Length: 95
Image (tube, rainbow, N blue to C red):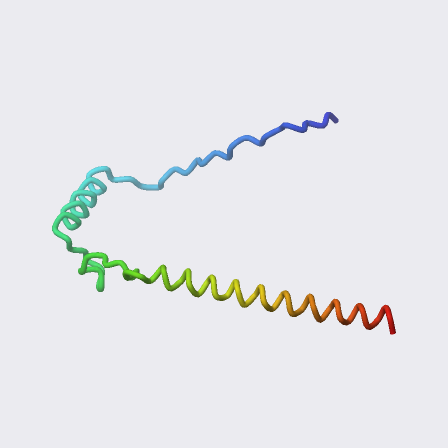
């Protein structure tokens, strides 16, 4: 049994065969969807309106401020824990 260090496995193959395919029906669906997209209309309820982003101006700035604040609090907490551990070690070693 030889050891292969640089062996990379082969890609897995995808071999799916559809059970039924109607080319004309697919073309018709494609055309209908394309026309609906051009007109800005879809059949799904609640999807009649165009996409509107939920991100507002200045929203990311607030996220970064909160992130920096959490990082600062975490650093302070680590320093306090380190000081407590040093005091505990000093107490155990010298008393």
